[in-house]
Length: 186
Image (cartoon, rainbow, N blue to C red; front, side, top):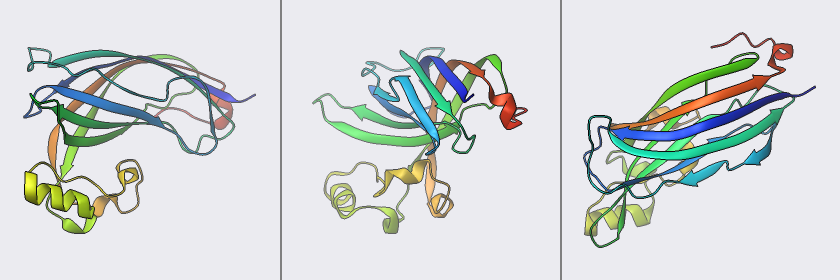
């Protein structure tokens, strides 16, 4: 019997960003052994007008997705790309982030997951030509040529970056049949 993981909750809020009018592109990335059963594996929040209050910039964007697997390799990760929209409707990149979902055997777990975001700095070897030209002419933030570096471990630690802010998820994780994989929790 395959292991199953159901993820229900929300992309809750953001804190610590220098810009307002943020929106977030999010994705749940899994390994090749994982099968998507139902629900959206990726999405985009609304543009949040205004700045932060005491809880941060509140998105309350719903997430509900279900996976099945025969192999625990490729445990799900949350990946975010944060953007800013200016007064003219133009979007500007703010930061990338990634966090693993907590791993446990069977049952139910409520989790607040903090995704620390970062922005590439002026390490031009990892930027596309278009990003370099855009930054030189219009300003803005550098972007990665290969955005898969955000969730792949190889070569990610060679990047130059600076912190950008935090994205928070409030998720309920429901798992079953992972005890057969000898998962004890992380």
